[in-house]
Image 1 (cartoon, rainbow, N blue to C red):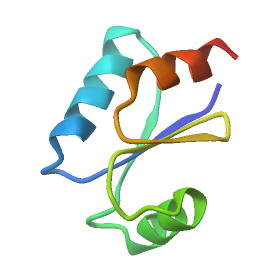
Image 2 (image 1 turned 60 degrees about the vertical axis):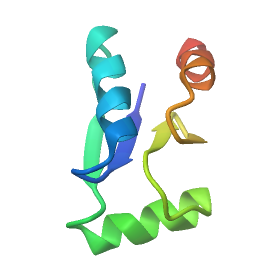
Image 3 (image 1 turned 120 degrees about the vertical axis):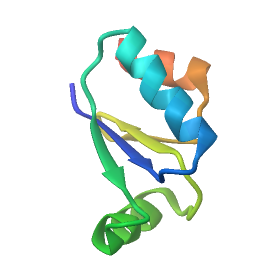
Image 4 (image 1 turned 90 degrees about the vertical axis):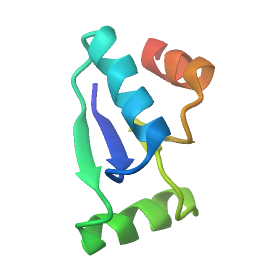
Length: 76
């Protein structure tokens, strides 16, 4: 399972989504789009959004911290 989380340091919901994955003991890769312009462009291209968090679970892109949608994506 491949999970990518696009974040910024000041984003409260980014912190929540990362804590959620840690509580479930689910490994993820984090990209700070405030510091990495290439990853910011990638996030915008894949999600159509410039706001964070953006979560990618095996190619399923979820904008924001939508716990129900993330749980559903993890079950697939």
